[in-house]
Length: 401
Image 1 (cartoon, rainbow, N blue to C red):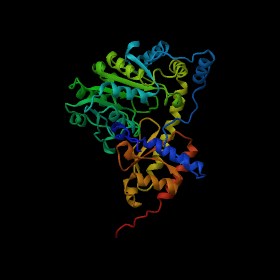
Image 2: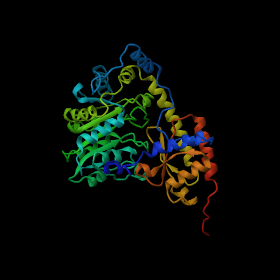
Image 3: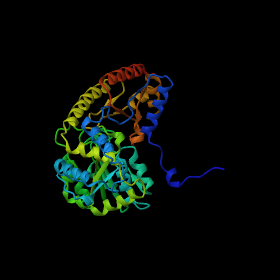
Image 4: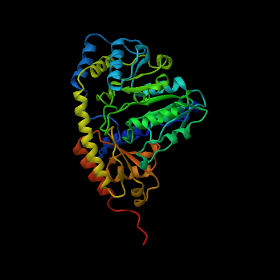
């Protein structure tokens, strides 16, 4: 007897990032020499004072359920962070703490989308956005912004994507996978479009806010367009900035009605985020940010190195980013030179012949690209580049005379 599963789950697919990471781990376990640059996870340890706060929480018995939406001390730290860094003011009733920003975004989709509602997700996008929308019975709409426009959609593209069914817009800046970041003026221009459509809720994923080196200060959507305050959910977390991926701690601020709905969703799924992680997050947000600045400087150095190196490879073109720890590069020429039908086949080529695991761009809504995580040592990046150069140095497809 075959056990059937819901049509809902059949609409979505496993995360390609996790799939590549898992496969690379299996190959390593089998004795293959694999350099995995697929996972989006800082290679730094959680800062000592943050880890100590978690240890003290355990020692002091802070190991029981908390309020679904988070403890007040952490909410106050989040409120202070939003006002200090972004000029956005919230009250405790407008804050929700979740088990990672991924859950925050899922809660948002579940809270605002009805069957048939559309959600605009600019491509290239983080792999999970469309699938979370579909799990909420929504329809993802993915206007594409290529390298020529810095992987950032224009106001005209946004306006063209909006229909009477549009209910949600998800913006991610700096962007996973491209590293592109919208300027204040660009956000203002997008906001002017959204101001004309009062039914639309906006979710801004600012997860990489602290991993940023753009020519002007980081700007969140509400900082640029405060008029959207009553329908924007500003999303962030501790995973990337504080090297706390395994602690699973995300948070958001937004309109009370939406936050209450999101909290209701969370209350019937996971309840509260880990009590221990909440205590660690308080230390992360309230203490000196020097540790964040040091990690950011290292990521910037790696970014500059890997972008230059990728652009020196045959058939590869990489646009510099302004944040995150990813390089996103066009491999359409290299694919043609090596007879690869698509970017998934090209990823296989690099894995099998170079021993380098990357994620194909099609999983991010950008076929013909690859994503590389430089959240690793410079020595690892040097070795990976050399392997890729060797594998790509001799084209497989003969050029016509």
